[in-house]
Image (cartoon, rainbow, N blue to C red; front, top):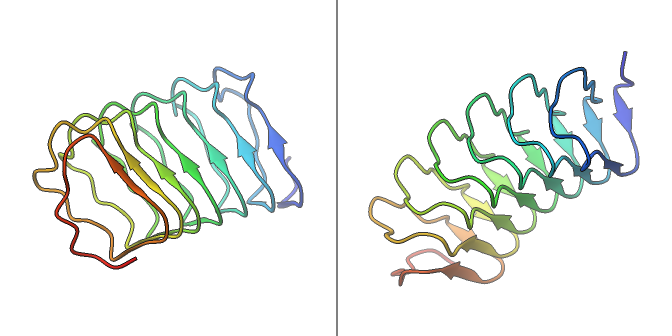
Length: 148
């Protein structure tokens, strides 16, 4: 059984499947799962203190993102926002650069760093976060209504 807290970083970037993976409830550092191609069977910690790398996922099916991500959240491989539930606050940058459509996308209220939506071909229906602490990168022009 996995410990409930891991203070440092966990690098499982070499894994392509979550089968048999037991993670702690709390990771104080970064958690790299960038090699996963599916969220099937993945139970993420409730808290990741720094970076959460899930860039290998192309679908959010079965993905439950932690409510607390202290720094960056990399979901750059997702091609659809269908089923994606993001935390209300991401402490650092958020990458969703693989999305081509904003359909079904509900962004966090606050992103402490940059927000990368560079793959979008349309921002139709997109409600922007209240605050973005860094750059907003998009392939289409945004009419920014939030705060920096």
